[in-house]
Image (cartoon, rainbow, N blue to C red; front, side, top):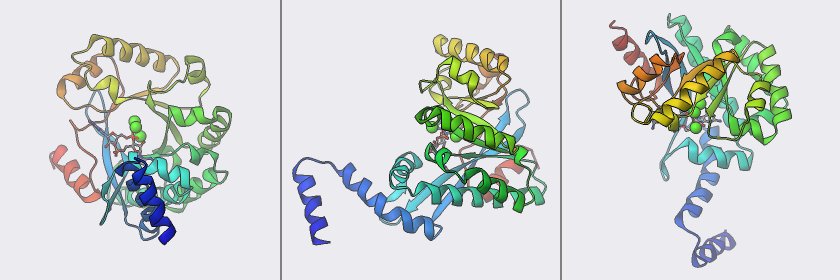
Length: 278
Ligand code: C2E
Ligand code: CA
Ligand code: CA
Ligand code: CA
């Protein structure tokens, strides 16, 4: 331990910043947070762009640590990938999200569920068996579950990723390509991806109502996606004006703070009843 503290001191004196220390603390605190179920899931609604009807939810990880405060998934997921902790996290996320979906189906909420996978999950040989078993154990249909992978996660090892995504689709799951437009997937690669859904990154959506270039990019991406038989999802809608543009462009699904932030399950149920005027 003394040796370690010494290393911290050296790192500091050499000009390493507080961020470095925080990352180390995250790496140390994460395994017990996962084991002790101190991670949480929030759910953000996915809606039909044209009708505004809620069709499903995306599960998003939350972690509030006593010492570290709020740790955003953007911050701890990449670290969990480096340490190998991601596999345990993915297992927990799948189990917890599917438990919730089962409960909602029993309560009459007709919802689909989207789960985020990381690049490393696609290299885990038992992934398909794990999610398939977890889904069937709860009496759920894989058709009501979408697995979201980022464009850049696929590009880490495209051949391997394509194989894994194919297996998942054969098992009946839907595949979404997340953050589309921020990575380097070429159109030729997009055509080869076994996917059902294309999620346009929010950087193209946020200012779509005031930036003609963004509207142009989104319009042509929607056309392309539809030609490839992909459902289009726009994420990061924060105002009505953006929604109206996307309706006009024929986008299929929408998500964003304008409709709802990601919410804990009980809050989501309240939001849902409110939204549907019940
Ligand atoms: P993502 O999958 O692209 O998720 C969308 C992110 O955008 C979420 O951030 C969500 O809270 C945020 N968001 C939604 N609507 C709006 C909006 O209108 N405006 C703005 N500014 N943001 C909006 P979050 O929850 O912090 O998650 C960040 C990323 O962390 C996710 O990006 C995903 O890549 C990763 N992540 C989250 N949960 C998981 C998980 O369970 N497993 C894995 N592997 N990754 C996860
Ligand atoms: Ca996502
Ligand atoms: Ca995204
Ligand atoms: Ca993202």
